[in-house]
Length: 207
Image (tube, rainbow, N blue to C red; front, side):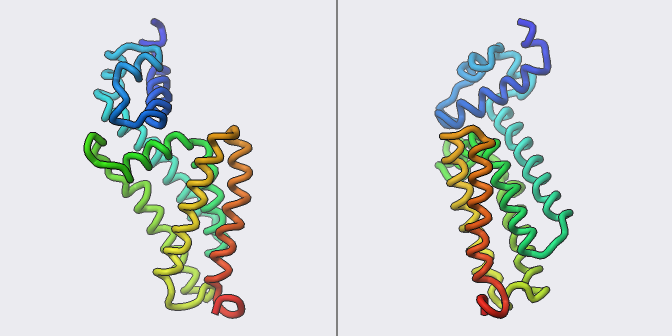
């Protein structure tokens, strides 16, 4: 087949793996199922990725790159801590809605049993986000935007809000195309984060 000798085969394999991992789980998905769904042969998968685990790590690398691009765009945006946190919420939800199956796959591996799952360092996905969000809270406290002395609980409250919104966005993506689900989720995440941020403000309403 022509596509087997074309670099498009790599994208076909990635797309097939994402769909199968999201539906069946990593451990329950075989190499045979992936190559059949992609319309290629096993040697093509081994050429591009070396193994099923290598394919999974390629998915992680793509996700990390997209994730870091979001963080970089928010860092470069300027504005107050509140403005950057709201922008972060919008960008993260847009990314989640556009790649909901990828999020399902990573969450299943991250939170699920380790037996049979690939060994993956998820710090670039989860740790970097957590530290960046905490830095935004610290910056808001430093500038007097947020009340003083409550960095840990404020950070935890925001993390909880992000988690709820991410979960809702993934669920919404199952029932609507990404643009529709994304628009709805983006509006919702601003509302949820604003409620949390209102409780963090220094002075009236926050103190």
